[in-house]
Length: 492
Image 1 (cartoon, rainbow, N blue to C red):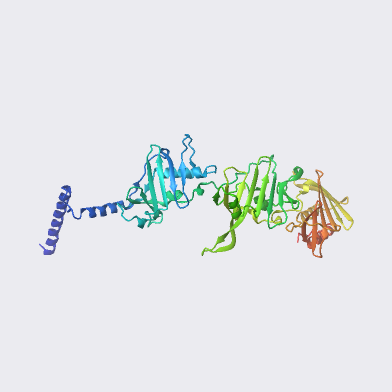
Image 2 (cartoon, helix red, strand yellow):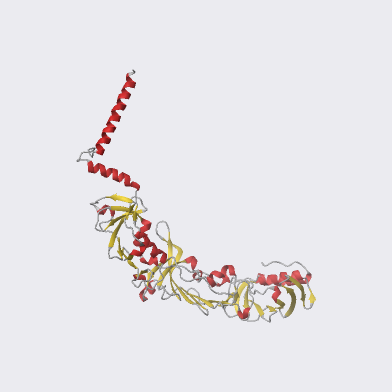
């Protein structure tokens, strides 16, 4: 037989025999000597436990009477009232709107506390885990009178985990940080950040009045329903202060209805005192929004700004949020951080939300009277909105082209409203447009020369806007074009 092959066969027999001997020794308990048995055993256990979960607490959430948390922000006590009610309560937040979902989550997480793995048995040096002087501890008090306390240490080598040790024991575990986060963080995070519910008004419910005051403006802005049940072309609300103006609903709805559904980014401070209002700028707010209707009343005070920071942690010029305080809803006695994007009242101006000088649809009017330098042009019209058709149009009793009059009326609707003006106007108007509705109402627009290039406008007797004289020049030219039967020029 080949010597090489013969060697392989002999070696295989020896290994097989050795394996059988080892198996026999293991069965008889004689496979390892006493001097090395413990260390080898630990190595095997640690290897096997690398991915093994360890159930630290196994109970029903209903068996826990309370959880007492001590952490770097002061902690809290989550309790199940002894009255027998099922409502959980954080005693330090009594009277404030608390998240039931979060409170139930804490009870469930503690009742079924599970470790990712055992890190070290009988740990002698707890400092390397941050467990010698832990920032967070929590105690579960059970209905049977027993209790269990756990300490939370540093982030583990796997960043999603924390080191945890049960009080009175020396075994260190890794527990998923998301399970512990509500015990590590502030009690204020349990407070509901939804401040005002959804709008409950209907077509039959009066809107009421919304008033906005700002320290950077020397006037206040107010919004109400359209007067006398006037049909809305764009928005059912109008601005009534500092001027009367119709609104562009795409831009104004956040202002007129932004309080409903208002939410905060976080609760900054609970149960503030007088000195707190001063510190956060609530005592003399930069902006105040007050709303009242038949059933609701809210007051939103917007205080100091919170500026965004760059990657280096330095403040920028961008305002990210404001400190705010809200009254009118129970359970919200807090100073809030509210994102700037949710507070349009802090930055908008009148010209940002107003729309047309008048919103009367052509089917709702029967006469437009234009007076220029003492000469009157009286346009009359009739049509049907149901048929979406203007039947006829006349000027001073003579037929004119319907489509040209429609273009002239469209030009009137396009009168710019972005530059408001509400100081007293002196002198007499050089141009007046009166729009007579079928329901008997009238809109009167008067134009006054301010400079060679600027015109002031009074709407229904109140100074309201300022615009370039180019607009009135083109309007008068369009009246002449209509007389000649020519196509009209669009708004400049």
